[in-house]
Length: 137
Length: 137
DNA sequence: TTATAACTTAAGAGTTACTCTCAATTTTAT
DNA sequence: ATAAAATTGAGAGTAACTCTTAAGTTATAA
Image (cartoon, each protein chain N blue to C red):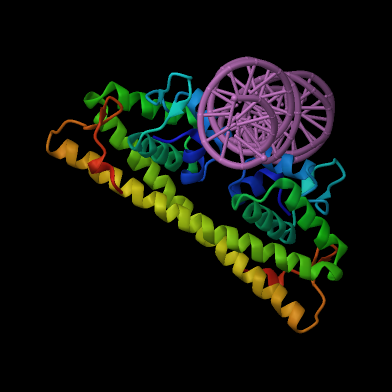
């Protein structure tokens, strides 16, 4: 059993966020001890993991709550949950593509500045002079 | 020259967001026509691109403004800007790793549900029964 | 065995980054 | 010429945290 701090450390999520998620109904099954303190089980950690996954791919909290509710309803919702996971995966793959593109731009920029520094050059990319040739990515 | 709508379409950013960014000082160099309407040049699009890049990697707006200001100051800030790009690239690579992990979890989940559906099985992963074996990712 | 430091709780205020609505122009297409 | 579409800034609204506070709980150290 884990306290909220242990879960926070283990999962790299702030305690504040975990409490916020708890209040949002993402962990309706987490038990409390006699002093009202949350006790996360190993199983609960798996729920935290999937919530973190959905969240980090940009799923809205309302939609995460929907997924949780579907899990609680049970077997009759398996197909809908499958659809949600497929959509989420699709979104994640799109984000991967976007991230690759942004990394390409950052690589270009890195080289651009490195070159300026190594060769002691001036920066021609400046709002005041409209030189765009060397900006093509 | 592009209107804000054309930039929005071209760069896949909402007009609202572009105006918000403009108000945040991210485009201090974009010219207006005689009726106060913004006219984005090709060069300006490059600025939108780098702002979008920084933003999509989670750079805070305050830090983006700082980067813009450094660009305007000019050559003396090249090293600081180089550092920002390096840090940003590092963050982007971390996000790539995180995304890969989340994709692995989504793949697992997808297979899990697919198996349930194909074999007409019940969902054992349920807040009520604490079965965790098949959850190991 | 007390005390004191670290931890937990909920409620609610504050923050960031949009996102939307509005009303007043301006531009474009018939 | 006039109706539809686009642009503007101001300002309200929203999502998802993030932090503060105050009260209570637990662990460790003198």
